[in-house]
Length: 311
Image 1 (cartoon, rainbow, N blue to C red):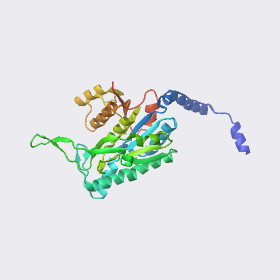
Image 2 (cartoon, rainbow, N blue to C red; image 1 turned 45 degrees about the horizontal axis):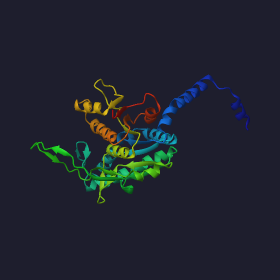
Image 3 (cartoon, one colour; image 1 turned 90 degrees about the vertical axis):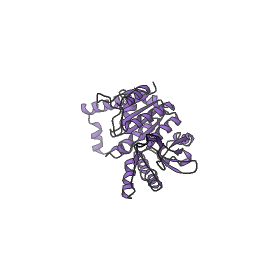
C-alpha cells in the first residue's frame, strides 16, 4: 500500500463529512418501510413526451427506474413522443391536424409515428436505462400482441347541424385487449420492459394510441400497485393555485364538472379513473422534470404530485 493511501486512511473524519454521511444513512433508513411496501409490486410509469425533452431529465429518470428495480419493484415503462413525432412530420413536410388533442393519423403519418416511437424514442429510453446500470428491453404493443387495438371513433357535435357525428382519425386506436402474459416473464427477470404506444388491429393494422391510455390499460391488466404519470405539470391544481395532494375518484369528477380540472388535464385524470376502475391501487400525476421525483413519491412520507384513489 502506498504511503499516501495509509495517510489518507488514517486521517480523522471531519464533522462535516460525518454529518453528510449520517444524513445519507438517515434517508435510507426512512425509506426502508416504503421499500419493503413496494417489494415485488408492479409499478407502471408513463414517461411523457414533453418531460422527456428537458435537459438532464433522461439521466435522472433512468437512474430512478434502475434503483426501483434494484429495490425489488417491477417497473414497466410506457413512453410518449408527441413532440418528437410532430417534429419529424414537419421535417418530412407531412401536415398534422388535431381533433380534441388527438393527432389525425393517415397512412403516410402512421409509418412516421411507428418509426419515431418504436425506433428512435424507444431505443433512446432503453439505452439511457442500460447506461444507468439497468437491463432494459424495448417493445411495442405489436410484440406478442401485447396491445390488441381497435379504431378509435370519437363523437363530436357538428356545428352546423348540432348532431353528434363520429370523427375519423385514421389510424388512431384504443386498447381493446392487453395480454399481460407477454410481460410476466420479463418482469420476473432482471429486465425492465419499455413499451412504445403502438397497437395492432385484429387484421394486422398498426394503430397510434395515446401513451397515457396505454399506460392505464397496461397498469389495469397487470393489477399494478401504482401508475405514475410523468408530465410537465406538478399535478392537479386547485382553485387556490396550489397542487392538490390527494383526490378520490368522486372528488376528481366533481372538479372536472365544475371546471377546476380543465383542458389537457381532463383526459389525464380520466385515464387515472379508468386505471383505478380496472384494478390499479392508486395513480399519481407527477412533474417528470423534477430530478428523481418518482423516488420522492414512492420512498418518502410526503410524496409528490397528486395521488388519485378509488375512495
